[in-house]
Each structure stands twice: as structure tokens, then as C-alpha cells.
Amino acid sequence: MSEFITQDFLLQNKMAKTLYHEYAKAMPIIDYHNHLSPELIAGDYQFKNITEVWLSGDHYKWRAMRAFGIDEKYISGKASDKEKFMKWAEVVPHTLRNPLYHWTHLELKRYFGIDELLSLKTAEAIWEETNRQLAQQSHSANGLLKQMKVEVLCTTDDPIDSLEHHKSISENRDLVKTLPTFRPDKAYAVENVENYKAYLRTLEAVSGKTIENYSHLIEALKNRIDYFDAQGCRLADHGLEQLYDVGHLDYDMEVLFNKLNSSVALRKDELHYYKMKTLQHLCKYYHEKGWTQQFHLGAIRDNNSRLLSTLGPDTGFDSIGDFSQAKAMSAFFNALDQKNQLAKTILYNLNPSDNEVFATMAGNYNDGSIKGKMQFGSAWWFLDQKDGMEKQINALSNLGLLSCFVGMLTDSRSFLSFPRHEYFRRILCNMIGKDVENGELPADEELLSTLVKDICYDNAKGYFGF
Image (cartoon, rainbow, N blue to C red; front, side):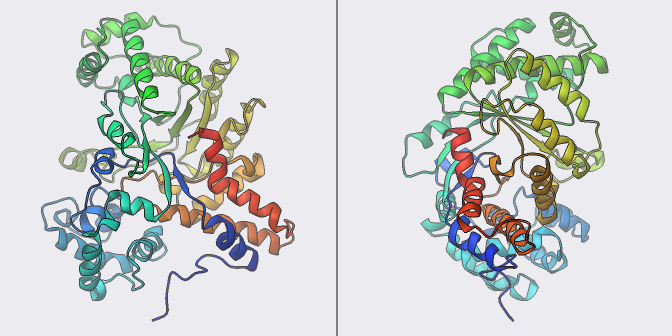
């Protein structure tokens, strides 16, 4: 059988090959948004087997396995790690044209030097070989990152996190530089009042601030922002279905806080107001710190209530939502910009029909103060595949400046996910090469290589200031 992941995988013309092999390939990686465990990095964890590092917690794979009719026992259940791997191997040949097929074989090739296609026929040998290599120091948590030339990681961390593992990492120069990201979603997640009150008690304890009213809450969050900043944090992140237009509303935040504190649920309009006003306070502090704020918008989560009740959140039951985005985004960012309190911002869109909306919204708040101050972020989640990346790149190119783009990230919980940067770089170089081939861009290697290097690494390096 001929090799599948060849040297020129996805590169369809001469210029694409030159741009990738001579320029993009060697660039280090700045992965400024992921969900990796800082504890595993701090301890330079040695994974027990390929299932632990590859299948555990990967809801992309879990969704594919369920679609193929695999019993939950072999997905998130109590089957042995080898049984789970064998079931995944059974499914892989049936993922053709799904990005999982590409990712699976890129990861086997890059981390383990394996060219065989994964199937039940090859599974036993691949199980043995990957596990043999995972027992070596080269394949520890940091070893895997260093293989991919990862220079900086930004994890995703709740305001109540102690950041103890980040501190340990910062004291050990042998470990990959790992910085926290401030993710305060639970600070305004008031849908479940009792859960919210419990969260505030924890926030109260870690901040050392009594939270008896709304002003106290903002003081406690400011305290945690200061703490994160001192630990090297330079980004915040927020996951929302949408931003809400609450400009026509006028509620007293202390009154709303007292309702929550008395276990009284907020009405829908009050709930939206509470979220947006709290978020506005946070965004002002981000601006003061010089941080970058990220907004992941458009997911409709936890659709399957039956399986959610047994498996919990983040197990593969989320999907693309169809929320109205433009008007509320405009109102939210305009309110901050009017007072010159709008931080560097990256917008991630999950509904491909909204790509042009997000691309043009970003353009509204680029004021010349910072190169690419407002970014239309990389294709996210269900869209971080070839078609989704191409559509995001085309929307950004047509309606903004691709040259200012800060590039790819993994948004992953897997230490084997970093070939996604290679995947993105190959797709980018191929798109540019096609434009040259079609006479739509000049065959100017110096000009085009600068564009590629900027998007792959240099823009992120300058934008985030790591």
C-alpha cells in the first residue's frame, strides 16, 4: 500500500510546496487557546497507553463512535483501555471524508512514525508500538509538545484556580512555557441559582474577599484578574451562545444580586442584563491590563438531556447554534469602545453562515492603534477542518486583512492534537499556491513567504507579546 500522509499531503502545486516546506513547516507553535491540563505538564506526565493520551475525553472521536453504533461501554464506559482502542480502530476506516481520518493518520505519523492506516487489521501492532514509544521520555507530556516545536501554551482556567501548576512550570525551564487564561463563565452563569451561590462562596474563599453584594463580586473578580496577571496571564476567554443587546434595559445590579442571593431566579431579560453588565466590567479590566479577550460564540450545548444526565457536560452532545449575533455584538463592543475600554479582541464563530458577519464586525473596531486589534479568529470546533478553515480564511481575506491574522490554535484537551497546526499550515499554503497558479496573486516568493510566516507564528508572537 502506498504512503497516505506523504511529504506533499494537501499541497497541490509548486508554490504551495515551496511555501510550506521552506517557510511554514519549521515555524514554532504558539498555541494561545487550548484545554490541556497544566498538572500533566508540571509533572511531565508519562501516559500509560495510547487510549489514555488519544481517546480519553476526546468528544470528536466519541461522537464518531456513537454514530457508528459503538456501545458507550467502549467510549466513556468501563471497558479496558485496549478494548476502547480496538473499537476506535474498527471505526476509523469508516471516518473517510471526516477530518478525524486525516487527524488520526497525521498524529500516528508525526508522533510515532507510523504510516500504516489504522484498522482492525493493523490495530494490534499499532497498539504495541505506540505504547512502547509512550513509555519513553521523548513521549512524556512535555516530550510530545517539544516534538511539535511548541513554544508557548495558554491553558483555560477558572478564576478560582490556584494556578499552582502554572507556578511549578514557570520554575522549571525544562518544561514548555505554559500560561493561564482567565475563563470567568461561571462568574455570570446565573441560570442555576444554587450552583451560582456555591460558586460565589468558593470565589470568596480564594480571593479573600467577602461577597455580600454585587460590588463585592466585582472586587473579588478584579482580585483574581490581578492574581492571574501576576502569574503571566495575558488572555481571557468566554464561551457564550451569543452576546445580548441590553442597552434598552436598566436594572439595579445590586437588586439583581440580592435576588440571586435570596435564591430567587432571574427573569430572562434580567439574566441577560446581569451577564452582559458583569462581562462589561471584566472587559474594562482586561483593557487596563493590556490583555487579549476572546469570545467563542454560537454553540448550543448539552442537547441530549438523557445522556447528559448520565455522562455529564463536554461529552459530545453539543452542536452548531443559529443565534442572532450582529446587533448585540455591535452594541456590546461599541459600549466599550465609546469609553476607549475595548481590549484586543478575537471573535470565534461556530456557524459558517455567520462568517462574513463576524469578519465585518471585527473590522468595525480596528482603529489603527494596534495591528489587527480586533480579529476574526480561526475556524473553531466543528469548523476546524479543511472546508471550515478555507471558508474562514476566504471570509477574512475578502473582508479584512489576512496578513494581520494571528493564526491557528488547537482548542484541544489532547496532547496529540498539535499536528492540527500542520494541517492548517498546509491548507493555508495550498490556498495561496492555488491563487498564484490562477494568476490571482504574484509568484513573488519573498512577498508570499512573509505572509505565511506572519500567519503561522510572527503575528501571534507580536500580538500577544509572550
